[in-house]
Length: 237
Image (cartoon, rainbow, N blue to C red; front, side, top):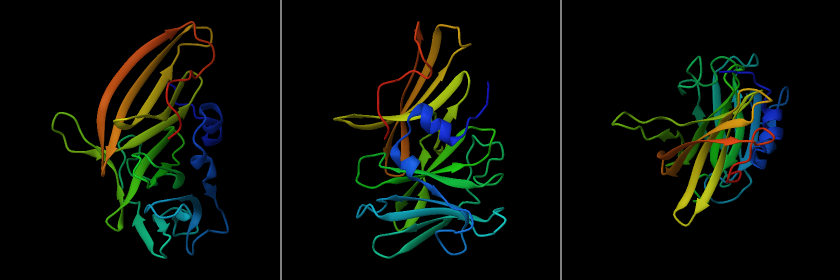
């Protein structure tokens, strides 16, 4: 599998990621919070009150080699923090979030239509695509969200993949229905530029509380299609 990464800017351009991702701001020598270096931030509605709340991800060291943390500045004046150093994502080569190259805010989106935004944090490791962990403010603390495992296994951290490569792409769309919202991880691949077939995979989830529930898997091929990646049903969440 090709792992060539064009970077977040190209992923936004090619795949049309939601505006919340584009609004995330990165800071270098002027951190948005005291003692936060290599920081990034995004505005959202994390406790369901006002959109002007701010999430900041940054390192407490000027060298940006950790420790890493996320901070929520809420509309009621409260500040909630969480250390990211012990969080684990199976899709990362080094396993722990932020361990190799740090982290950044990726976006703030309402993934379950409850009026509150979930916070997405991306690991900066260069060889894995953009691997995103999902967090939620619940019970006064910031919680990392899991996906309910199949076949009796323990829940595992939910991770979303964004990849823009020469022959492979991955991104996420949302599909709404009267039964609720589904979050769909899309993957596409084709053999070469001149090959007429594109293989598509879709894995759908629904978020309820602190758990993503697996809904369905679907794979199909489209022949004679022009342009890559192909559009699929759904919209940015």
